[in-house]
Structure formats: C-alpha cells, structure tokens
Image 1 (tube, rainbow, N blue to C red):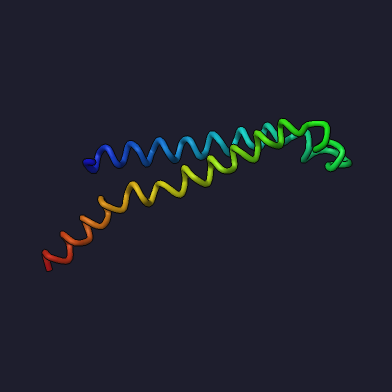
Image 2: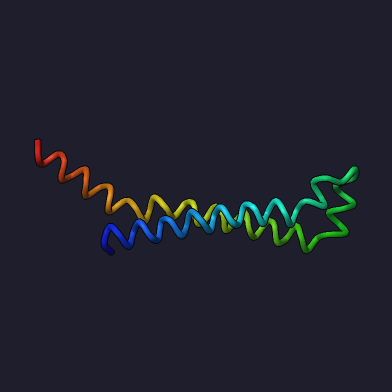
Length: 84
C-alpha cells in the first residue's frame, strides 16, 4: 500500500469513527436525557443496542488508524535515521 493510499484509508477510518460517535449520541439521546434512565433503557432497548454497536465501530475504526499508518511512518523514520 502506498503512502497516499494509507492516508486515504486512515482518513476514511477517522471519518467513520466521527460519524459513528455522532450517531451514538443521537441514538442514545432518549435514554441519556431521561429522569429514570433504567426504565427508558427498557423501553428503547433497540437504540441502546445500536449505540453499543456504534461504540464498537468507533473503537475498531480508530484503533486501525495507527495500524494503517505504521508502515508509512516507520519507513520515514528509518529513512531519516539512515540519512544522518
């Protein structure tokens, strides 16, 4: 994978993580703003499941960014060390 492709993949992963975080906030709004969150969670269990899956998507997408960029960044470090 070239450096340009890695940058694009990292950018897409970052955007996916950001969009998923906004959707998590939207899908769990009814439970978070309730006077009795436990009863609201029972009523809106689908929204909580969606929020939980979106949180997993956030973690996965943001954890993959360093994995994708490591070869590019490690290569630049090796080149700069060999130049000195």
